[in-house]
Length: 295
Image 1 (cartoon, one colour):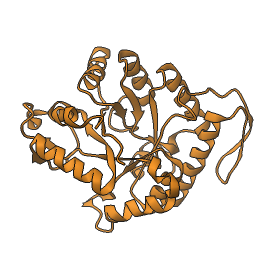
Image 2 (cartoon, helix red, strand yellow):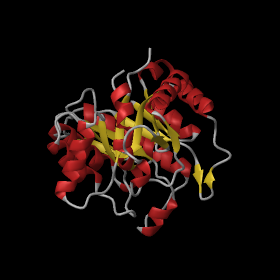
Image 3 (cartoon, helix red, strand yellow):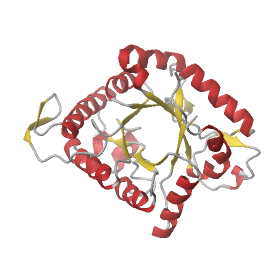
């Protein structure tokens, strides 16, 4: 049985408090389920936790999430405290997205060592285990290769139980298998090089197979996620070509009906039910959300 569709809007910028609140309320009004912010330090984007807290305060049912925090930037104990606080103060509407870092550029700009892929995935694996304990246990003890926690008490309990939803984003085998074991939501990405798509990237069928292998019985409980930044709805009444910004991705024009059929087919084939657009798409894509959200 398929999960019902839900849709998120990824955004990162605002010129003022009023502009940010207007965006958050419009995302909710259009029927999107989540407002998501990336964790990038070199693109002038809003700081995720602060901006998400304001968005939650300005809305009533809209869920909020990180898409995604770079695990290397924060100690898991400190991030878990922030996440549990945001979940508590938003009334249980926060989804914690985590990743191992997209590349060395930002690390170099801020003088942080960029570890090997294997080490960063190892850091993330232990961080997820630490945070789950912090969300669910009175006293936390953890002794791993990278993190050691001793007799830590006084943890803030999130509203969502047993813990708030964890999203892990990745493209490679080790990351996807880690997500399959530890996450609730898996954002399946593609490997990208400076020249574009990585020709060595695995097929989507292979990625789903890795997830199924690692998840075992819990696969049925996983929510599979994917960005659809390349879709442009031709009969929405909103011309996407007039929207400034957004990722430099060629657009696929299709009607609302064609988009609905395509997303239904992708859900049947791969299981994708949670889809994200970027802010500049949200008006253009709204007719598809109206047709599919919750179905």
